[in-house]
Length: 155
Picture 1 (cartoon, rainbow, N blue to C red):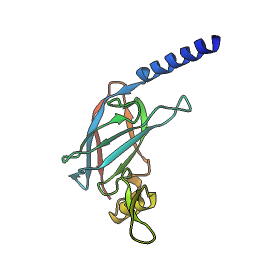
Picture 2: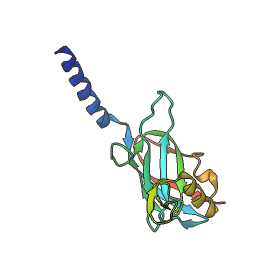
Picture 3: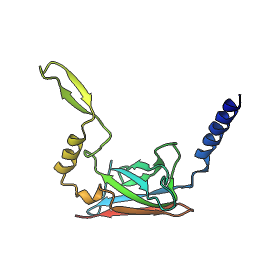
Picture 4: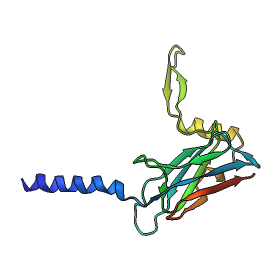
């Protein structure tokens, strides 16, 4: 009986952990060579300073004007963890979240698989500088949030 009580207590504590994440709203724009970067993916990962697990990363996608709003990967909460983040940006066509169609050896069947090499090739074919997608870009998220995050990308 004591085990059940202890397990239930742990589950209740963990359920409350999600609510206590230090999250602040983040939105902004991405430009490439002075023009809004439409349909680009932006992902961020907080950098650990005081613990081994700094919290979940965030993601967003730009609209036609290059504007984005970040959302935590899990749980689905608008914003990003307060603190410094690594930033990865990939253009439309360099998306790393969609599957790639494949044909069977006999050529009769088509199936879908996630092929990271194909994604890297898609980004390379667009002449996308690796430094925009390798995590070397940074974003500082203050406790009050950031409504004017800007990434002005140039070659």
